[in-house]
Image 1: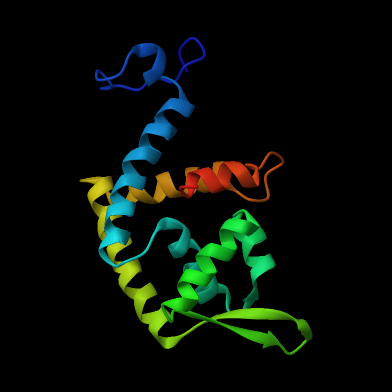
Image 2: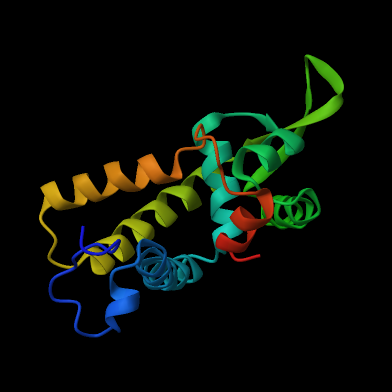
Length: 169
């Protein structure tokens, strides 16, 4: 560390006062990665919010809309619009929760799983473009470090509003 800033060799494109700041570099990296991901998802007909909801339903299984909203930190009102759109398109269904008949459980349809697989391939290609010629070990290290920062178990998680903004809301 140099004078409270990290030494980032080869960062001539940004002013020194910014190039050595974690928040600035993370924000720039987010904008670049997010732009690539948004473009890739648009090609398969999804937004980042819809992808986040669909990905969670596919990976976690049946879940209530409220639990899904909490799980990904999306505003419940926004979640209603996202799920309504996914349901109208035939990607998810709402089924009565057998353990609590007052609730509905969201489930991915076969059509939703096919779309999710296409979205995963699109996201992987976008990430490969974003990461450029980084070596696999560097990508692994980056993911480990970002995971430590973004850990949902940390003492200072992002607020739901901050997560919603990061998802494009």
